[in-house]
Length: 279
Image (cartoon, rainbow, N blue to C red; front, top):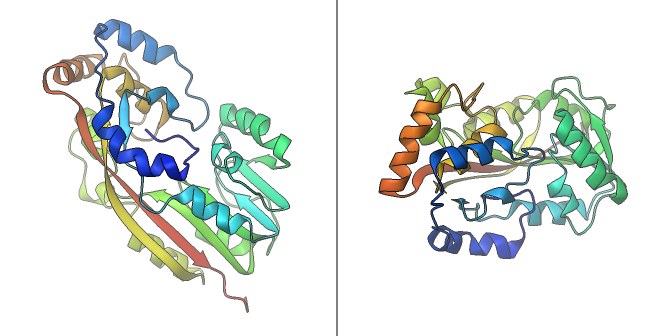
C-alpha cells in the first residue's frame, strides 16, 4: 500500500511490487487479528502493510506534481494533511505554508513532523468555514480529502491561485466494503465521481485546468492487512470492529489461505482548478 511519501521511483516500482510481494503470513487467524488490533493507525503512512498488501499508484505522481507547484508560490494551504507526510516529503515548501487536520492523533504527528519545517498546523473540524481570510493563499492542496468544500476553497484562494488535489474516486475498494456490508445502492457507488467534482468546482467560479481518472489494482494478502486497513480508513466500513465482524473475517481468512490475495479496484482522480485572476 502507498504511504504519504510517494517518490517517483516508488511510483515506477508499484506494478513490480504487486507481483513480487506475495508472501502469505502463515500465522494463525487469532495471531494475525491480535497483531492488527494493537498496531497504531496514527498518521497517513501505510508502510506497516509493506509485504502484506499492494496498491498500484496513479501514473501522474501527485507528490512530484505538488512539489513543482509548491516551489512556484509564496503561500500554500494543505487541507486534511493527515500526519503531514506528503508535505514533509516535498523538496521545497512555500515561504508561508499552513496545514489543517482534525483527528487528534494526526494533529500531534503532523505538528511534530511539520513544525521543524516551518509549517503551521491548524486544528480544524474539516467543515466550513475554513479559519482563514478571503484571498489568503496562492495554492490550496489536499491528498485524499474526505470532503471537498468548494465554496471555501474558492474563497481562500487568491485571484489566479489554484486548487490541486488527488482524490479517491467512485466505488474505490468496494469489493472489500461490500464483502462486509453487502451490496450498496447505486447512488453510494457513484459518489466521488470526478465529473461531479468538475461541476461543483465550476459552480463556485473555478476554472478547470486538469482532470484525470484511473482504475488501479489493490491486493490484500492476509487478514491482518484487511483489519489494519479498515481500522485506519474508518469511513470504508463505518464503525468497523473485529468483534462485530469476527465471523466474516474468519471466512475471509480462510479464503485468503485457499485462494490467494483478495483483489479490489482502487479509483483515483487528479483535479486542478484555478480561480480567475479577475475575481
